[in-house]
Image 1 (cartoon, rainbow, N blue to C red):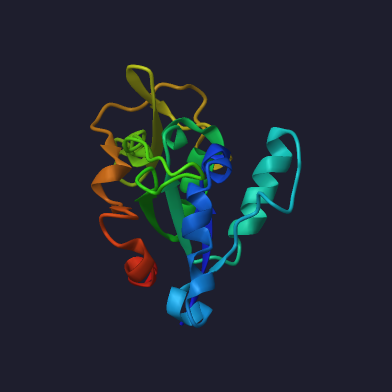
Image 2: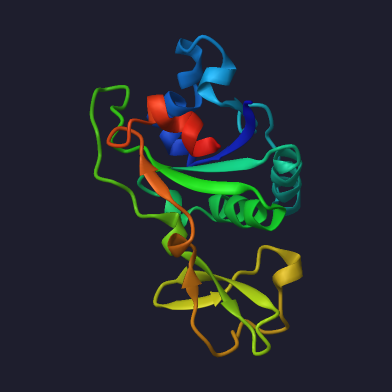
Length: 190
């Protein structure tokens, strides 16, 4: 059965055509069941401004999805709204994974070195009683509390003592070309 998938990506990767290769690969399959997904991405249809409006747009788009795929290009790891989409997907309980797309040829037939894994720049840390989990993001040379999600905000940015666990230790990342995404994407989504 096909899943409803939310794709998280840097807009530059749409301009370079790499994100489109993944999002539109179902077109050459016999039906969406073969591809394994329906695309729930939002960037084409809405133009909203301001943080609250963008958060609302993302939250609405994620509502009826069960999978979030982070398309990893050169700058994806640093994009604020990609980070927000990842965190909201995790809180929602979506199956989350990443796909490197820089090995896909762009509209000029060129590839790029792999982008940095955004899951290395987001993490979590347990509070003193192990019951509360704090979401974190890497800023420069240190972990700080992730503050774009209201239920995670403390009165200070100081994290409790303890180890931060990067999301990369829990969420897989594939390469579209090396791992044959065209044929394996439906399996990754399941």
